[in-house]
Length: 302
Image 1 (cartoon, helix red, strand yellow):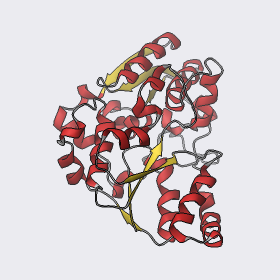
Image 2 (cartoon, helix red, strand yellow):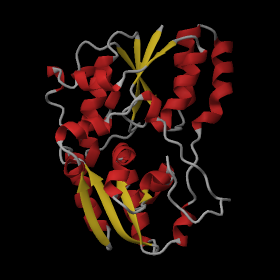
Image 3 (spheres, one colour):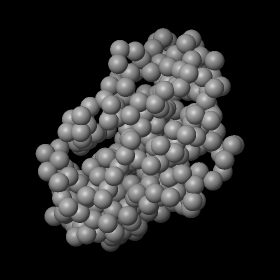
Image 4 (cartoon, one colour):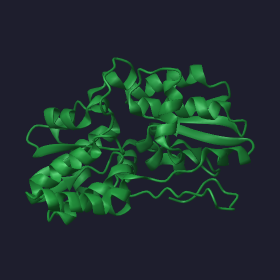
């Protein structure tokens, strides 16, 4: 069985675990390359997708049209709200929207993009369909269960700094554009902080946020009260109504110097798409835990 993966969204969060259990179940792993993704971006089925990242993810799915099954991350699980990103079907239920909008794709299997309570249930369900053996499925899951936990920086490290700039925004934009947005200075990045901490921070102020909005607004609250941070930069896509909504909300929260950098201002349209595309070889980002590290640098190469 040939199984393809969407790597454009949260691959660094979900990819390790799912590709390893699927490989151990005997399936062939299939990944689209950059050229295939960029070629499929021209497909007429994608014309009405405004958000650049979701358009690329859909193009990646088209490049995987010959596989038996596509694995796609659920960006916002079990949260129904009419607020913010909850109004955008691509954010609210990416796998189902991809299957509905882009006709002719193979079946899509939705997996949690983070370590959620139902992730083991979803893994066993998929492994059973591949191995047809409860004992084999359980053994494979147990061998890779440790890969469910990512390591993030302790937020106390922020307090060591003075007059530091911080970068917030959708994680998939930060992964692609942090270096361009920072120019010649280092940034404390939202993606270095555990998403659960950020979502909990946001929930203290608003419980009706989908996860991706909670991460951005949680970072807004957290960085706003950190004395070590003197400036906050939001990275946003002008084509995303949700990013513009997040910008308005962040402006109300943040009482420090605040700036929005649009990815369209960093590169022209063609180069923008090229920069956004993630390939399997370079899609995995390592986030190192440095609680016992004596280094003075908060920013580490990823």
